[in-house]
Length: 107
Image (cartoon, rainbow, N blue to C red):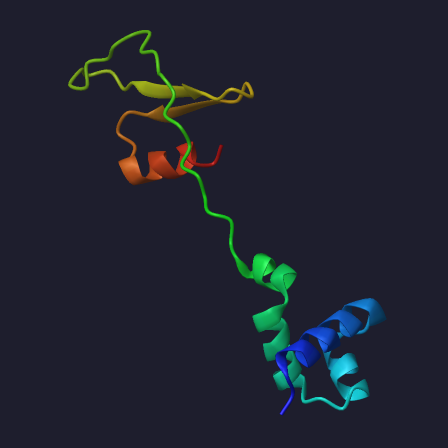
């Protein structure tokens, strides 16, 4: 049975070798899956790579309604969204909210 220190030594030697895990495990006469499990368990850089960065929710930004609209008017009206990068998007008021939400999230 291989001790924890020996496993860590193999991981260090593998990193120094520049070989793939598979090539190192063949050269060191170790089972590939066994060696991969050691790397997952004992290599902190590997563990850090596995952790997905958490998405931080976008902060709410204030909006200005320059011309309030009457949703029941006979005239078709558009909603205009101006992004900080200068892009402007104009959508009909009747647009489905889920579509509008997906367009807003594009930025």
